Length: 507
Image (cartoon, rainbow, N blue to C red; front, top):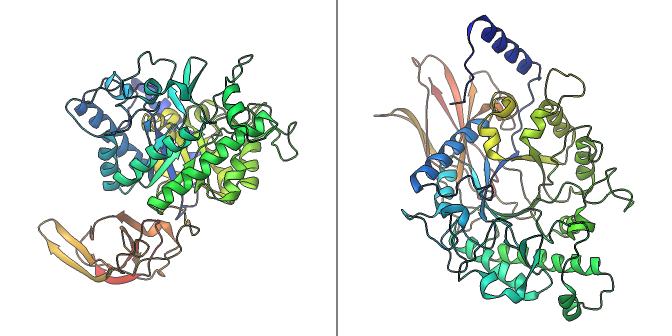
């Protein structure tokens, strides 16, 4: 349940009435059938450090339950914050952000990544494993485990701002990160693998990146140091993408860059902003990766408010929508900053509604990722309440990625309404297998319901009853006096939808 503030007497009643009134000011948004609704669950902030197995599972299960109610359909779970692991790995040590000590296994033993995959899939959510590629040590880490890459191969790292970084200029580091990703993809049923904006480290004024020796050895004749660093990251991104898709073509590769690509004073196509830049400061040429198809989705972190003088949200969402639309584009939203900022048109409310309006205007924007999950779970500024009652009140399928797969499974078979010990149920049979082809194999089902006189329209998401991995769905029987048409379709791993199977049921 949501945490509620206790109100005493008539003032409490008036406060509650005012709050409900302000919530009602946001118009009801048209439901979307396909939309990526993600949330980042981070570990690097220490929220799980030292928790018992039971307590962490209880905490995560509660978060997933609340996010599911909010309409979230994808979780991006941090599993590799500093060349370590929140999963069972023979390559890297257990993370201190899990057990409090790097290299120490959880006790009682469990595998958080495997557990999260199971929990998310039970709720119909995707699970994307979030890794930080180059960061080998955060500022707070004082000891590396004996099997940590930074301990075993210090010559492949450099220190910057009290962090340890795998040198992006070394080919062996690109190979190493791809090896780690391949291990995850092969052994775990992840739906995606995700990287954020930590490529070359965030710059510190007056502190140069110590990569002279690497440049001398692997300069490849590139005269400009910035161009060379971008070349290194480009090589890695291309290799990473091919590595993942060669192993499992359906696993989505996502990257969440910093919210500014370039400022207009540095580039003709730059945004009208004045802040740190992916291209110039982090050496991440995100637009190249989008245009070359080296990622499957991007999530720029547009964490500022509408009207910010240095980095206006309105300006940036329009810029990304214009320039980064060759791959599915989702927007990284800062929940707390959004609810703390006042709407520029109506000072009585925060900016959540205004940002949602911008999402609807930008046809290239196909989703949102919440930074971070716990803020939505805690319902800061009623953000989560507005998701579940308005913006994400109906279930949503994932956006299509026809560049990976255009094919759909066959439709379900043998629909039947049956009384059981658990009540009235709609059952169906999976479509016949298609030579074990993953593109044709059903993984989930969508159940729709239409009243007797309603036209069957599968483009209407308000008619979706469930998106489920099961081959049955409860029917809300109430005397058997009203006739409904139930429709069931099958989804493959890319959530491409089959043709419809129909049945009429009296409820």
